[in-house]
Image (cartoon, rainbow, N blue to C red; front, top):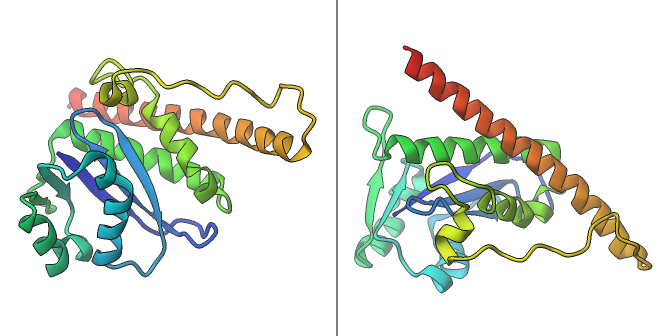
Length: 205
């Protein structure tokens, strides 16, 4: 089972101004896929096929809100015909459980902070944001989403901005990457603390 959600209203970065966010309910592994307005159900489905289906196939179920893409006849026919259950949430009857909603809120907060901090370059660095998120320890599963999905931890880039580099273009890239990585760590910690504070507040009532 996966959840799907669109993040709209992002700063224009290259040709992109929104994201399709997918989170695996079991492993918490996430994909952050850039999109540009206006997008259609056909475009979103093609993006899913290009980036997700080729590796993971189709999910048993998709949890989403009632965005026009998810309620369109195209979307309904495509996934229902493939045997994927579509669970559409409403304000009064959410189809997601508390843990899934908590993960989605954390992802949304993390990405909102990151894209606002890098308004012109977020689309360039969004793969690093995904890598950073999926390789951070998750308390609910007691390991990283990456290891939960693939069974091992990935190798890290062996060079850093502190490395001696004779190629100016590479040095510039390493410097920017180091800055972005620091931002990612700060925003992920901020998002997690915000979610923890909200959970503690709910328990106190």
